[in-house]
Image (cartoon, rainbow, N blue to C red; front, side, top):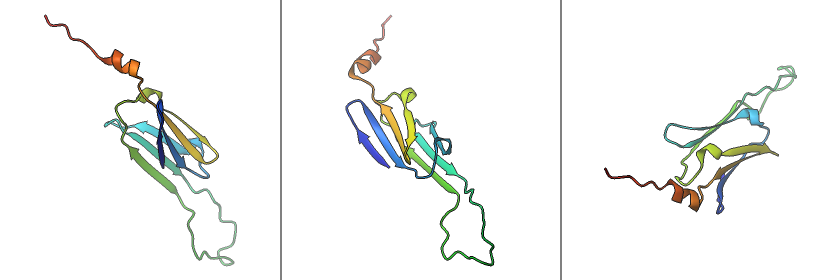
Length: 111
């Protein structure tokens, strides 16, 4: 996982060769963390007769990945976006602007 920061957002990149957007699930958990899950069932069919071939090493199987990323407080959780392209999952997490931070400041009237 690569994590980068610009003045406007955070960006996460994950290498997911052979997976599609249907294989990826993104969510925010109860603690406010970003959860990235990838599950792909192995759908390879055994075409060769077991008598003719045996594996010396077999690494293709069900793939599962789950990563939890703590999110900083200066972000828009509702504006997180993601896309899969050429085996790379790109997640963009927009930051709250200075103006938005100022607007979030509340004054409390004393009665």
